[in-house]
Image 1 (cartoon, rainbow, N blue to C red):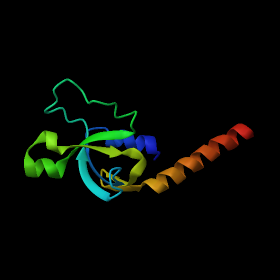
Image 2: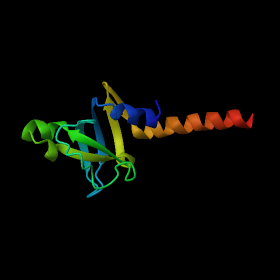
Image 3: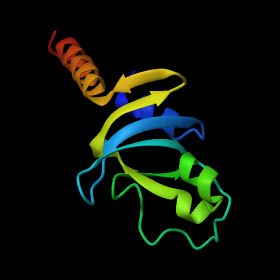
Image 4: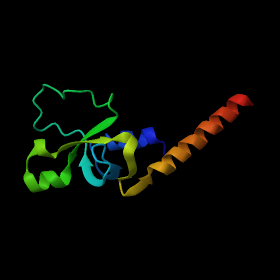
Length: 114
């Protein structure tokens, strides 16, 4: 699976878990998250573009279970700092994804050179 395919799975509204490094303090964090939650949106939108900042907006499922406050549960995962992602019971290590994607790119280049 390529990294882009994994991000699409993460962005499908399914619950997934992942570990990433926070931008604010470089701490590692594991999150149980879900994308595509529309509850509590005001229609004004975020003050910035998540894609431009390479962020994935999510709901932290565990925070929501504790607080029942959707706004406190909203988080953003920096895509470049993801260590692993578990979707549908399968854990993907991002370093492996990058290696696999690089191999696929090399195979494509080899086809072009031939």
